[in-house]
Image 1 (cartoon, one colour):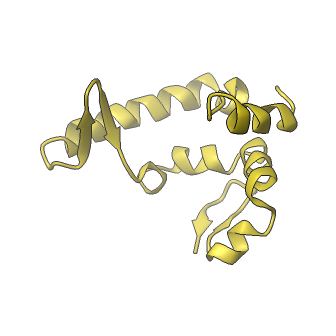
Image 2: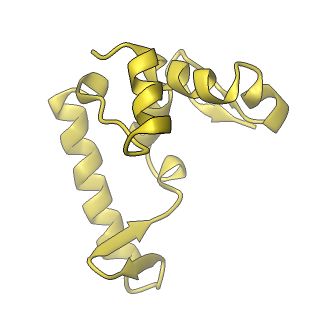
Length: 106
């Protein structure tokens, strides 16, 4: 896995995002993909999927499946975020993200 400094540099000075291949196991990746496709089909008729050009966007994934919580609770993701915004950012915002892969709370 890339070092955190390299990830942060790519976010800030590069493309603005990074890929972390080891973030999910193949099974978790398939679970996330299946859930996104399922949500898109359910939410599209309700107008909850934003369509722009060639993309469909579903907002609020974090609250629509445990697998999405696990993504943001990964220690590497948290370390990258803390490096960019500071370690005390989550406490100041009223959001606490546990690194024990349990859940988000506010």
